Amino acid sequence: MDITTIKEKILSDREYIFAKDYIKRDFSFKELPGMAVIIVGARRSGKTSWLRSYARELINNGTAKEKICYLNFFEHPEGLTIPMVEKAYFELYPEFQNDSNVWFLLDEVQNIDNWGPGVSVLMDRHPCHVILTGSSAKYLSVDIADEMRGRGLSFSFYPLSFHEFCQFNGVSIPINNVYPITEQNTLSKMFSSYLRRGSYPVLAIVEDESLRQMVLNDYFDLAYSRDIIDRFEVTKGTLLRKLLFRIVKNSGSPYTIARLVHTMKSEGLQTSAELVSSYINMIKDTRFIEEIEIYGTETEKKRNPKKLYAVDHQMAVLFREYGYSEGIVLEHAVFSALLRTGMNINYYRDSNGYETDFIVSDISMTPRALIQVSYSLDSNKEREIRGLRSAMAAFNLRKGLIVTMDEDNHEECNEGSIEIIRGWRFALNPKAYLN
Image (cartoon, rainbow, N blue to C red; front, side, top):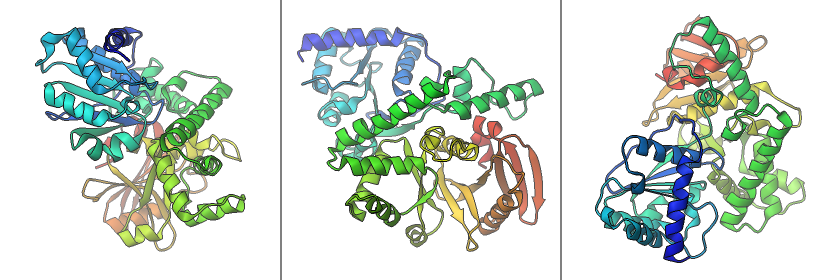
């Protein structure tokens, strides 16, 4: 690719900023001088639309559009490098060489060879802002220290929160603690739609269930083929696909490497604990699967199974053998809401086998909230409360939380108080319940 072609791409890609209206996302980041901002998230979570909307926001706030170099590298441009982009841009606008309000917004930058050193040199030569996006944690998170030599700050980007889902459907409701009945009814209906449609932006307004299933299957295939097979040059594709299928099918359930190896071998596939473990790490790099451990010592973590959760609650039930599970969908929606808080998430099981779905901890791993998720408490209220009470006693917390579909209530017990709230209340403002 020659410099003239790159100049044309800079000018033409800028038009994408104005191609359509974008819904504002509830996402923010912080900058440090001389550091690139790295936006890491699953494919189809909306990073590209966010980056374009951010560029438009900069322009609306007074930044000249010429000072924004937005480029999309979704398809690998043969021979293109970051130094070539730098050369082309500053030949177009030599007067901006030392302008500290120039922005390089580089979308799917992992598709450019040697992008890390190139971005570092760009920031050394010019006092510019750099924002990078990518779908693979392998290149934009795990290896960021090597690629950027400590020159990047990584921020996680997820599919739609419930609040964003409402905005996508034209429902703009401020986040408060108290709502009039009319707004409660609206939010309850919207939350039911959110659970049914999932959190991927393209599906936010799609009513046709069969079409949604087709799109989710396509996303699964993309994670397998583009984010794993192509990225890591996997040779045992059949093993990987079956492993990924089983993980998604059993999303939210405990797993061990030994159990997965046994399952794969029972299906006639030759494998080992080392291979399955390496494949799971690749699967986590897709960022549409997140892992949590039991809360406890390192010994306890090694002794107990981990859990893998799909970040989209409809992906979690895509391959379920026994049809739609409302409880699994709600649990995953709560998990995804917790992910967006940036807090540490674990689960807890006491010596009697009673489990608490989520323990939320601060940066020092001090527990801040204990959360159970139950679609309905009609038949299992005693069990859910018993698990919470055990965790409250173990961690000396005076409050527990049960998230349900349609119940608001309050229970007192010897350990403290248990608040029962509707799912839409929690999903709309999860941070309000984490103190």
